Length: 291
Ligand SMILES: Nc1ncnc2c1ncn2[C@@H]1O[C@H](COP(=O)(O)OP(=O)(O)OP(=O)(O)O)[C@@H](O)[C@H]1O
Ligand SMILES: [Mg+2]
Image (cartoon, rainbow, N blue to C red; front, side):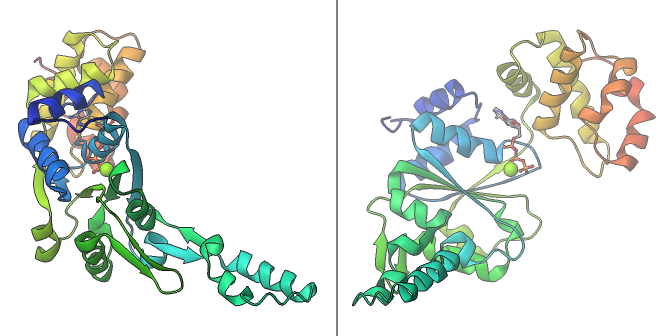
């Protein structure tokens, strides 16, 4: 589809895709799209960092290409690899049949044996894709430096094949949970946006947009309770994902109200740490005491 012409239009489009973005987030994405700048999203756990990239791809009619980062990820897994197994088979076939095509060796390092990984796929797809580089903070320093290089020119050189370049770069969304600080150089290249917990009314709206069957009154009670949970000093404070989950669980069990009793029974939807459970159980009355 046509790229949205204003921040308001983008907000509306995202909403149609089931994502409620606040003005700041929508602006960052709009500018990123228009000026071809990567957007770096940091924030608490479960506040919609990954989801916004997915929804954006879907509402813009673009392919979502996802690079999930983890400790030890390297360029082979991110960019491209040679398909060794098939190369070996090919060599075997060549020798068995005594074929000696003049370019047999060149063919071995040709497109047929190249395994495309997310970054190469994204460079090839250009602006027909949204590239999600998820949880970049989990990758190590060298990988971050390498990413920076790819992000600066959207160009990949494969010695045996040549250079692949994106005419128009994809929209790049990076996410981080801040398990470590990212380098200034990477940040400088990106538009930065922090996603915090949404205000109560918006969170209620998010629950209702995701779970339209849930009664509004229940959604409000759940959101109020989750906000109290976030004020406690929990090891794993609940994100928006947990709010949605809790409301869905209660609704599934036929509950239309939240109180200490049904909260206790369904805590597993929202509190996922043993020590946290103990803290929360002792305070259920207060936590569920109304919106
Ligand atoms: N503003 C929002 N609009 C619609 N849905 C939202 C919003 N914020 C969060 N969600 C929902 O919350 C859930 C969690 O979102 P997501 O997985 O994107 O979080 P995250 O920030 O990537 O979390 P993590 O840090 O654990 O990776 C998703 O199901 C998503 O639909
Ligand atoms: Mg995520």
